Image 1 (spheres, each protein chain N blue to C red):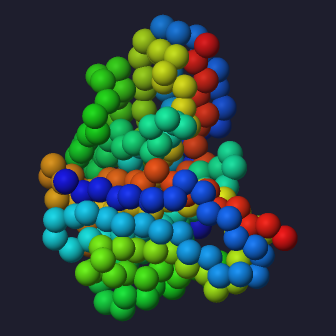
Image 2 (image 1 turned 120 degrees about the horizontal axis):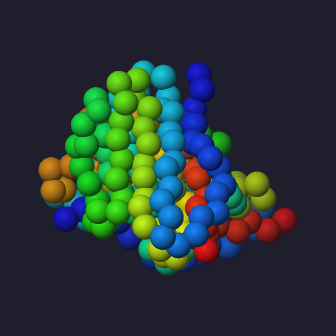
Length: 115
Length: 117
């Protein structure tokens, strides 16, 4: 069974640009969540989607957005990039989030560098 | 609010010795607790979780964790460390019941485990 797949793995963008990251969850998983990992802030929750609906959102500015498609694949978008957005962006999938203790599985991440 | 603390930034262990990576939590209600490992330039790999039941949970790669409700701890353990266990370890708690969330994890800051030959 294929794991969580994220594309692209590495990318470099310029301040002010926008970026779209893609995530394909494990087959059968309907919950997709996104996390940002930085050395200073650690792992921070961005948002979670379930059945194409955003179910929960972390404390990030509106420049960060996402969506989920009918096949559960998800994309996240960051507009007007800032240097501080440089991070590893991790996508994770699960059957239905952590309710009833479902395990969340992570992808390899997308490394974003903003210059 | 749910939170997790990993009091040690780094743990150093000799190969073959037992290892412990500490985690304490603060939750309202019954916790769902998780351990993940991250190797350099990789994503997070699931090791084990505690939902309910036995306080000693066994996971991947010979790791286990002990849930202690009175001490609100969920320490990760392994009887005999390997050099290949060297990595960054994260403890996490389900964000359930925190602001009405359903699917997120709240992570500790991580503990770097270094196993020397």
